[in-house]
Image 1 (cartoon, rainbow, N blue to C red):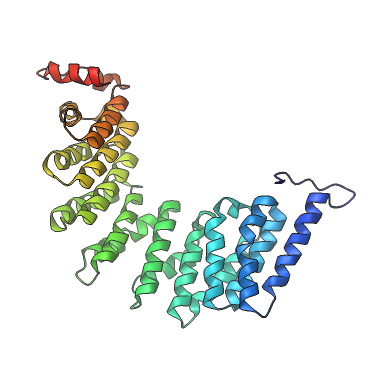
Image 2 (image 1 turned 30 degrees about the vertical axis):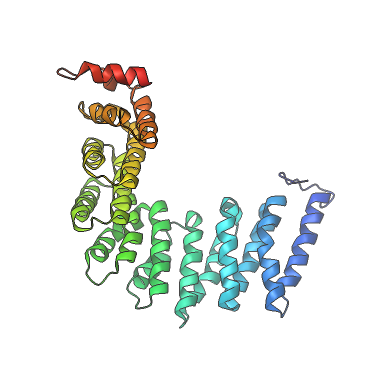
Length: 340
């Protein structure tokens, strides 16, 4: 039976705590084993331990032990420690000695092995929620983005994404760096696809958000390949939903792609983005936008019709959108009502 509440009594440890300590002792023996296989087996069992015994003292002790394995172990063991951190995200806030945990993991960033540095960056990124403002980590991410090793750069991109989502200061400070990398000719196309989504977090001040939007809209005609269009439209949509002021422009941009881009995946992506913007700010939509959605709802493609109707359903909850604009084709509104 899963135990969710820890209760330490004056008389000592209760049965759940004794069971938890016994389980941790057993896993600790595995971690100390000289055999890599036994160490790996112990590491992969920690997420289940956290679920069964979600006690802060146990989780804190466990993560410190895992950080030690990360510090002194090989890259294979570090990979499994990374997996534990990623799988146990909801328990990270129970780590009591955060400074000590970070110190042990961060020490590996000075390794001469780029794979070890990459694993360190990914591990730090996976715990960004509890260390959002660690300047030494921010600095290491920026430095690793300039690495000549692809594995390390990709790990830095992952870490940058995680920290940008958690830290306003990091997001703002990284804006120019990420923008230059995206625009740079030396940056491979697959790397740009990983960098673009980071921009969705650059919404903390008006000037930065405006610069990012301009960058992304400039990218669309330069990179018309489907993968680029999808990731850029999604990024712009997330940015608009955060700032709100750009929702009208983003709706018009999305509708332009909905009408003029024949690729089905792009159209589906556009409708998903429109659904998000309808939920976040239907009252900001341009008056003429409903007509384009109704025309899609009248179309022959069932998947697009369903997605368009989903958007229209959300829009009908807004009094501002339900008003029929002057000059609007009434038959379109009647069709919309019939479909809904």
